[in-house]
Each structure stands twice: as structure tokens, then as C-alpha cells.
Image (cartoon, rainbow, N blue to C red):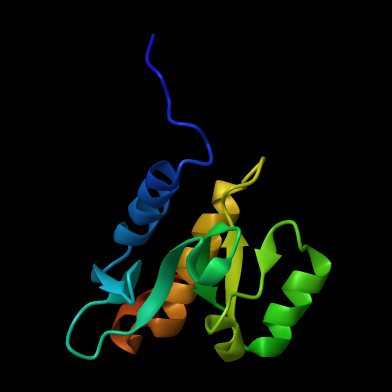
Length: 136
């Protein structure tokens, strides 16, 4: 019998997030302040996701992703505090924490947030074809 890691195992959760992030075009993984992070490639690449393993005293293992701003982040936290939280330091810039160490993680939702955050950080040359495709 093959044993699976526990669903709250940080290495397992990091592996799942890494797989989603690295499937996107021109992504590189780079540590930032001791945490795994993903950014668009190149010299002017921007971070679009971080893996938070209970950093800054947080009880959560989480994905940190960009929102449209602090209002959207606050609305998400207010609407679903079992899924979302305002991460220390990053929350002030509108980043949202998506809690991964909980029962019933919706990995489609995690993928949505990684992709959405990537689109916000990626250069136009990478997103323009996706924008056109979505019109059809």
C-alpha cells in the first residue's frame, strides 16, 4: 500500500502549489525573505505568488496571491474567513492568504488564484493571447 503524506504536510502542500505555478509560461521559482515564491521570468520579473509556511507567527500554511487591492482582500476575508486571511505585511498591499492547512481545500480555487495573480504580474506579451482567447 502506498502511503500519502498528510493533507496538512507543508512539503506536500508546497509541491501542489509549485506544480500549479510552474505550469504557467515563463515562471521561475525564487526564494524571497525565506519563503518560496514564484515570479514572471526575466530581469523585470515580478512576484505573483508566495508559499507561506506559518511565517510571521501565522497559524496557516497558505498561498499568498495578488488581489485587485485592499478592498477586495478585505471583502474576501469577511465573506469566507475559513478560506482567506489578511497576511502580515503583504495584506497592506492587497495580497490575500488562501489557507491550505484545512479540510476541503478547493484546488481549482487555488489554481484560479495562482493564474489570476500571474496575469496581474506577467508582461502584456504573455497575457495578450490569453485575453484574445477568452473573448471567444
